[in-house]
Amino acid sequence: MNKFHNVQDIEKIDNLLIEIIKDYYITPNNRNVAPPLVKKNYKKLFTETTPPENGKDISELFSEFKENIYKYSVKTWHPLFLNQMSAGISYPSVVGDSLTSILNPTLSTWEASPVATIIERNVASWMAQMIGMPDTTSGIFLPGGSIANLLALTVARNSKLGNNIIFEGFNNNKKNIIISSDTTHYSIKNAANILGIGINNIKEISTDNRNEINIDECLSQIKYYKQNDYNIIAVVLVLGNTVTGGTDKIREIADLCKEHNIHLHIDAAFGGTLSLTDNKHLLDGIELADSVCWDAHKWFFSSLTSTVLLFPNQEKLKEALNSDADYLFHKHIHEDDEIEDLGRYTILCGKRFDALKVWFIWKLYGTKNLAEIAQSRLDLVRSFYEILKNDKDFIPSYEPVSPLMCFRFIPDSIKNKEASYIDKVQKDIRQYFRLSGEALFNIASLKNNYHFRMVLINPLTTLEDLTVLLEKIRTKGNEIINT
Ligand code: ABU
Image (cartoon, rainbow, N blue to C red; front, side, top):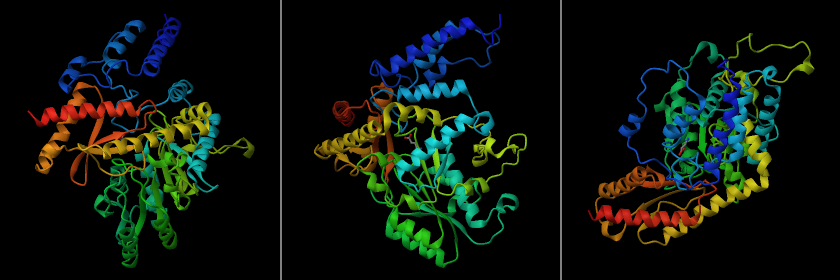
């Protein structure tokens, strides 16, 4: 029997996939969000220290997957999975992603993936239009916002220092700096590290209670570093701060960057979807950016990963990278038999067809429905904020501008206690829910205190789910305080 392509095995696959898709999408509440397990018990489930010598029957393998992997995995589609920005992916995305694996094109070269190359370019251009970038914009799909930020800053560095840096490395004595807020995503720090700029050369601008950049300070710091002969590699603004969903105001800073020819990168990984809502005005000035990234796998209902990195002038990206691989990138004899090789616009040689799931989402729902679904999440967070504001035991940490709500439980009984005790109460409450698996929400430090952090992008999460959860938090919180 040919085990590699066993027809009987293949016929059994659809049963498992359909069973799981139905469990996820038709009965999303049928079990807890997370299994009631601590790390040491998880480890006991998986004790195989050597690879399996002999293959298994596929039905037994499915049973093993369901019993050990599926059952004990965190249910990220559950309405009370509020922990991550990857909550609540859509079924067209699951279909698109599965079909991506079946087609398995690598988009490095167009000749192996002509359709995929064109679809990726088209979907990127839809995203550019949606977000309000200029007509010249094109985009590339990448596996995550962190890689997108790294490539955007590679372009920024090379634009500033010249593409000779590709071959010669650093060759200047001036201080090379990046200007961003003190709450910018940690991937900007990784990029500064990898690009040889150095984390300490990120000049951090202070932020308000929603983690939004202080505009006046940013403008005056740009002027200061310019006057003092620093090389400002880039200014990075954030649309959709990871902890608060806050948005940096773009226009004034963008104008100053244009005046001084400074690369402006916008990390809109989360906030890009605001372009579909009545908060679209928060993107004002985005058309002036030199690069923008937007994660469809956050609030655009796609599965991980599908990030688009957009450039009004994408040739700069190609020029900033090395694509010296003649076994891959061929010059074709007839010009009309040539589409661009997307591999030249990325450091990835194996480049997945991540745009297909976004194509499925967009084609199935259409912009109109997508906008309604996105808006419903903004309406949800606004209603939740009002409930928190009017409840004497809860304090919302800011007025939300996108579906990310932080708040604290501070009843009268602990109001005058030390900050460290109040922090401990928040942590203990969150730990209870994580271990019980009833709900999974996050906790984060915001201006030196711990706050619950709830990502409210899952289209299945209702206001009632949240109010019931609040009551459970109150009950558990009082129990913790009184013991
Ligand atoms: N890149 C930020 C992701 C944060 C989150 O999933 O909650």
